Length: 421
Picture (cartoon, rainbow, N blue to C red):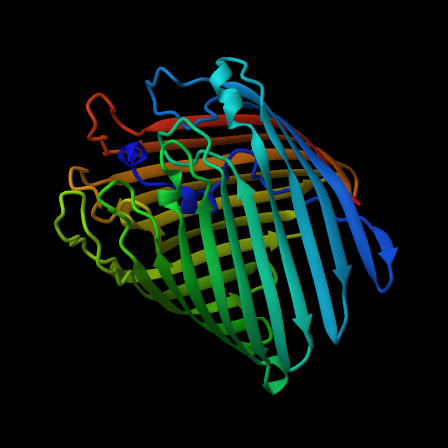
């Protein structure tokens, strides 16, 4: 499989980083239109952006090109609150159009994209509650570090969650099961080999021993399977039966200062696999301390947050990566109508053993962040200017002759219009 030589994906990191136009807005939702006992909301997000590297091409690549992109996202929302049965639906589906300004090939990255989430609650405010939750996304971003093609994929998780709140809410327990799909459309590079599905189990217990302070116990399991092989030898990613458990404190220690401190253990519990040379895969599991430490300051119109987290994630071609992440976030409202925000993250990524027999080990540094300035003409109507960046520094060299490294950098400047009435 040609694509496997490019290295592992950063797909899971991207969800934590500011990528492309993903800088969130603080746009408030309007009143909407009354529909029975609920309300329907509608709107549109328009982004016109300059992207210095839309294909995530590696530094020095002859294919590297800049482009302009127009991103459209019609917005719809339904909200039917009820003490018996509640229903919420939010969706944004549209088109990402690349103009092919520098090189016409980048226009092939244009695609339909969007996301939606649904939450159906039974007795949602009661002592015993049950929820059905679905989260869907469709994207064509080429998030594999040095690939220059579009990789359309669908992510979806449907989850059943049971919640108990005994003791007047001082205790709260959540138990959930989710079925997750990360499915790639097939193409000439055999992209479907990146596809996976997972059974996920979640448990969370919280004891609020002070009005704004709680002790938290969290557990999750990710039973990940890869049904397709990368090449004619049916070489595929090893299965994972990952578990994570943390114990921590979530507390507001003053009106302005809050802390999150969690520590625990994570284990990838990898299954069997066969490498490209026919030998058994014998990669080491991720077995280590995981956790998070976060400090937040909120006062009037100012928010400042910084923290550190350690965790691991399943990833194709290398089974998993361990992630040490440092991050800082800032948000400031000005004169009631302006918002300035910034976000910077630094990740150190240590990958497991490669599935391909001739693929070397890999360690990455990943720097991402951005800044946004927004003018809220109305609560539900916003104009904004965003800047986002990414930089990947890796010791990984692709084993194919002449393929080189996977380092890349990317800068995006976007004008934004947002309406959500």
